[in-house]
Image (cartoon, rainbow over all chains, first blue to last red; front, side, top):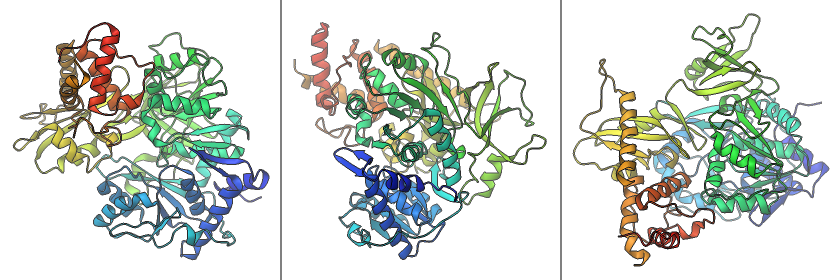
Amino acid sequence: MTAVLLHDYASRAAESRPDATALAMDDERMTYAELDRLSGRLAAQLVDAGCRPGDRVGLLVPKRPSAIVAIHGVLRAGGVYVPLDAESPPQRLGRIVTSAEPRLLLAVPEAAERLDALADTMALPPVWSVETDAIAGARVRSERTRADWDVDAPPPDVRIAPHEAAHLLFTSGSTGEPKGVVITHGMVTAFVDWAVGYFGTRASDRISGHPPLHFDLSTFDIYATFKAGAELHLVPPTLSVDPSALAALIRDRELTQWFSVPSALTYMAKFDAVGQDDFPALERLLWCGEVLPTPVLAKWMRKLPHVTFTNLYGPTEATIASSYHTVPEVPRDETEPVPIGVPCAGEELLVLDEQLQPTPDGEIGDLYIAGVGLSPGYWRDAEKTRAAFLADPRPGEAGRIYRTGDLARLDGDGRFHFLGRADSQIKSRGYRIELGEIESALSAVAAVRECAVVGVEVEGFEGVSICAAYVADGDLAPPALRRELATALPSYMLPARWLALDSLPKNQNGKIDRPALRERFTAETARRRGARA
Amino acid sequence: MSGGDLTPRIVELIADVLQVEVPTPETDLIDAGLIDSLALVSLIGEIEHEFAFLLPLDDFDLDRFRTAEQIAAFVAASAAADGVGTPAA
């Protein structure tokens, strides 16, 4: 039997259940037969246009059924898809596209303006429209549209090996340069195999697709749903700011599984969008990406006693998630964080000290991951790969371990607990953000003489708040600086709190005193609250 | 006193709390990408501090919270319903 590749799930479902719904969003539905036919035709045209195994294809397609067609078209051509965040400023997008070096970009007509702006920063490869309408920008025009590629042709007979790349996902990099994580077919199928077995996913499931496609959590939704031959209900991005609409979608679509970053759950809870015993069809609620505050979890669990709640943990470099913890009952102590649990099948979590020796049980150390989920490394960056992926130090182990940068401890029951970060990376709305990337974007603003960005823990909804202090030449008020920064960074990276100072606090070594800055922001917030109360 | 009277204070609060300049009181702040879910929650928290009462969120309708003008009207109506009277402008 040949090894399974990611797009085989949908093809197999198309054989066994051609008329079953694969995808639903708003009023649109797409069956497995249609998904299979369209993606096969797109793949044939991609190969015809010179796309070869290993070639990258960029996707500037918002989350919708045609994006899933595009993903499968690229995979069936043996290609590597690179989902691009259309909300990201052209400057940042340009760096990602330059690094990925795609043979082709698949896009939608609405992306014309973004493509034009991108074309100002770099030479673009050919652009195709995944929709019927052409892309007609001032500078960028689509070479082909759906009318050209949706023509009868046998799907290409391309088979690659499971250890080869399926997609590249770019995350925030500490030096200001986004870094690409190489994700292979085998990494994802290993997780999907475990997840479909553990959660008992079946063809009658209706599963949410909440994370954006440039987020690795989306690959769990897509491929686990298709492996089970179930329905994937894509959550329109516009709903993310509307708590009652999100809840209505879970209710009206009779979703059986909801999976999102914690902030979406916190948001719905904050607005009391969930009723007692709401969502009768819902069986499982999963979250990943950052810590879900225990009081919020307890609130959800009391509202939905018929639902199973599972915390998933893991960085993109180790594929979707590497450990899980199903919460057995409503937490009695709401000050106790939820454990990140035990490893998924084929994965290992290790808590090590600075000499890469195991810490005694119960003691804090650096968290490393080993096993089937590990990425081959960062795209075209051997140095960063060597720094993060190390040879397994244990005697007799020939594999590698990945340094997560997280701190953890192992409890007496064999469960792991997350205890924060060892570096300056923070999580906000599930996004990994390197504060260094924000600092380098701020430093690039001409009038900024000196700056520092710190994460400050805040009570309640936000978790960690991004705070920026700066010294400017002349008059530069925070709103103007924020507007300037928005041309370089996506909105989720923009600082929430600002301080314009005459000089930054320094420690004895002349370095920026970050703890002192954090205290200032904390005091500033308390002062303002106090003044208003 | 109508909600319109609170609009300048809401505009000021948005600038102060979120460092976002409100183009006009009628601008849809969500469609314009100036406010996302996190900013919305921060803003609600600050409004509650500023006006010293809790906004009724259990029946929250986003379409009444898209512009500075709408937010001002919502705050005025909620304050009246809450019995704290209309906040002084």
